Length: 260
Image (cartoon, rainbow, N blue to C red; front, top):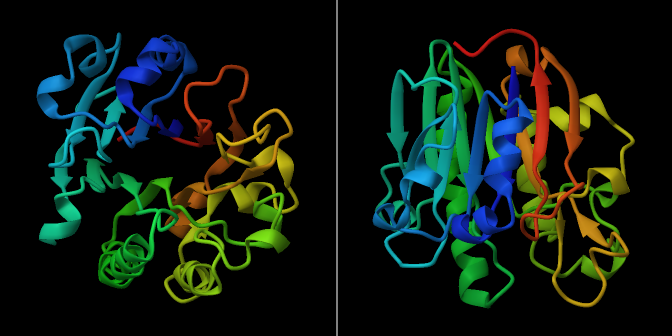
């Protein structure tokens, strides 16, 4: 079973760069996408139903902003859109698809890099998302949380860690919160479990400034974070960089078993 997570930085832009042709040939059973930047009415059939896939979306109310989606080889048994928190749900940041005893979530944490107000919104999201993380961990389901978490957890997870100690995405408070997700709630960072020493090959995002992508001055901020049972079935992972669909690269993980 192959699960993919990809921040598209605009679903229509990613389409124009060949993302959906790649997806159809990728072997993905489920693909979680973030930052679709489109309303439901903007998502045409070519984006909604690439060959062999069903899809569900949770768009932001603001046009051209945020939003998440899930593509899957079979229709989900149940879909949950949003966390039931009005201001968070208005930004289209959480979408859950259940396939039998497996739940797959497309998640997009806020970025705090644009302003102090957005950093405060990020911290607020983290605080209010915690009960959901705790509930999912205790739900009896196996769960894979795929998405752009906008946090590099450790020094190995970004190129210029010394220069980013006071920057959003690598703040001590953010990193400590993510450590608590793992240490207190028992969630597993699947790629890091598979490849504990992977550095530059693990980066999934590069700034559009300067020569960041060409020089691989990147960050690992896209994750598949899973409950221990399904995490133990992960056998291989990779970051796809042969083609560039957005400022993020798709993260692929192969798990034993089949979808549902």
